[in-house]
Image 1 (spheres, rainbow, N blue to C red):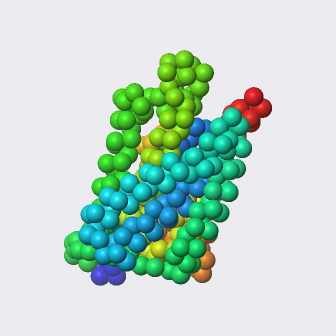
Image 2 (cartoon, rainbow, N blue to C red):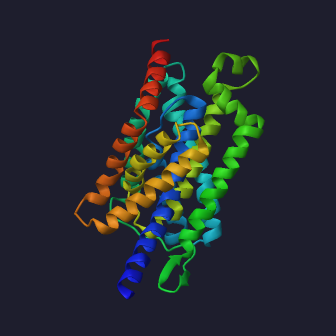
Image 3 (cartoon, rainbow, N blue to C red):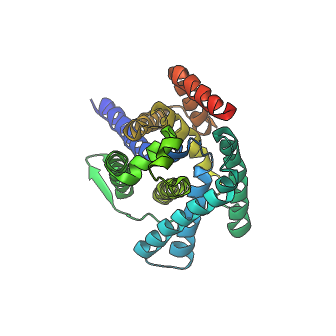
Amino acid sequence: MPGEAVRVTLFLQYAANGIANGFVIGLLALSVVVIFRSTRVLSFAQGSIASLSTYAFFQMFTRWQWPVALAFVFAIAAAALIGIGAWALAMLPLRRTDPLTRTVATLALVLVLQMIMRTRWGGNEEFIKPLLDSRITIGSFVIGAQQVLIAVVAILATSGLTFWFRRSFAGLALSAMADDPSTARLLGVNPARVAATAWSIGAVLGALAGILITPLLVLNPFQMTLLMVTAFGAALLGGFDSVPLALGGALLIGIVQSVTTGYITTSGFSEAFGFIAVFAVLLLRRGHATSLLDSLARETAL
């Protein structure tokens, strides 16, 4: 039946868009997981770092007219430096404090980064051309090459991080520093180097998310911060320590968000969905969330 075929195609289109959004949310969730696994700090600044890195790409690619590959490479390099700078600015002075204090400090970092973006580029919405502008059409079903690129990058990043955490000395050192800092130091792990590495990797993951999704949305200082709300829900589904589960949770959230907002056109529902998703995840994993808070409280008391 033609009507049924149209409904199925529409549903698949919403789901495909949700998968692309889910992979972006997953990259942001991975940035949270990387930092938490090594420092026990929940960084609320990853969205703002992603936005600032995307503005760097916008400046080079759109305004300076650099070739897209060159702008992309320099923007990723800038993201790594931004991550290290954020760590040095907000975390290094508080290195002897508890994780909860450092987590709160990331909120101040959000305000600083947003002030920088608004001062340099203003608060108006900007647009970036897609890195890949072609489309793949299968019957009446259409998917953009940019969406495929997002999926490929997210899968490669997840696979690489999983292998790196499990097989490389640096990845094992990051996990060891969070699990048992005293023993890790005795084994020669440098806490400052571990933290700086985690923040630079987290910033690069956020930059990938921002650069890849912004051509499908708009660029402003707050766009990625709103996505971070949903990313925290995905990271919580992964227990803030599992890279594959965080990506899987992000895909689930992304698909549900895209499908529900496709059918529910109430004003403001799309923006509120991130908060709804986090609330739902907290209900689903309230036991893990409670144990996580207890763990942070014990570390704070120590």
